[in-house]
Structures are given as C-alpha cells and as structure tokens.
Length: 243
Image (cartoon, rainbow, N blue to C red; front, side):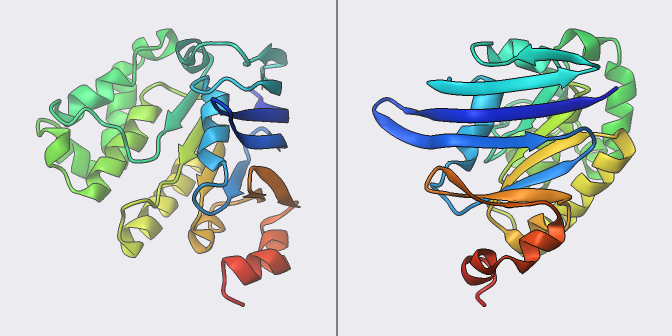
C-alpha cells in the first residue's frame, strides 16, 4: 500500500499577503520528512494547504495511494481526511470540555476508520497508557504533554495512511518533546506511516528525519537528501545549532 505526496510550485497566503512562493517538496512512501524553519516562515501554511484548510493560488498537491494519483487542490478537509491523510495541528486544538475518549472518537469519523474504532482505540490506549487512565477526564484538565498525546492519538483514530504533524514541540518542556518525538518514531515504524512533520526544533526533528527541507521566508532554501545532509549544512549550523 504505497502512499506518497508530491507538492509542486505552491503559491499561497492569506488575502493579499503571500506566504509561500513556488514551494516544491515530496514525501515518499514510508518516509519521515521534516520541514524545518523558524516561526513565520510558512511551515504551517504548507501543512494547511495539504489538508485543504488553505487553498493555494497556484501549484499542485498530489496524493498517490496504491498507484492512483489524486489531485488534492480544491478538495475539502473532510474529503482529504477521507483519503487517509490526518493532521496533528499546532497547539493540539482539542475540545477541552469533552473527555479524552470523546476527543479520540471524534477522530474516527471517516468511513474506513469507523469499522476499526475498537481496534484503533485499543492501539492508542496501548501506545499511550496515560490516556487510558484519563479516558473519562476532560481534555482541558490534562497537562500539556498529555494533551499532545490526545492530539496524536486522535489523528491515529482516523486510521491514516499519511500523518502530518505541525510543531509537536510547541509549549512542551524539553524532556516531553524528546519523549513525544521518540513516540512518533515508534508509531511510524509500528504503523508503517508516511510522515511529514513541520518543526523548528532541529535537534529533535533530526531524530526522526529520513531527510528534509529548510523553508525560509516562504521558499525552500535547502533540501537534504539524508538526515546527515541536514546536520552538515552550513545554514542549519549557523541558524539552528549556533555554530
């Protein structure tokens, strides 16, 4: 079941403000690709273009799933989720008054996931035992790390083929960031997921990356064919590692 994304020549923004300029990246089947960049450089906007929340003014976004190519531009977020693409949004975006379990069940609305609710719920509770302990607790009363677990688990409840993760480190203590990145890596291997992760924390992102891109002022400034390429890039050393 091969699943990949091809993003070519994307131009996008908000009203008259252009954020992305001729952005092209690819995410091949089974890869973990990281999109690196500091705040305000367009990472989240690109993720939102893939999910249909932002509509690009130019360019192509193509999902290839099991040999079938599907144009995602112009499709609704609901349709895109239905094709097997799930997003873990920046800032978690939970329903704070609902319980942990209710938040998780909301992630399982797509048709292919409904028949596997019990199986997927068992999987996410096994992956995040803390959530099983808190299943009846309101999501808004959880710690930041626990809320991030709910956000990731909710996306997994949709039984995705491709997982988009936007800034998983935001608002978390360094030790929790490290634990979350390790858990994402574990999930990728166990579920054979294809992952695109937007992140500004290079030291954490590199732990999961097969390869990646650096975005600066809405343009791809560097493409690393391997994680080693990213680590050895002079621009990354200067801006992210303080070299």
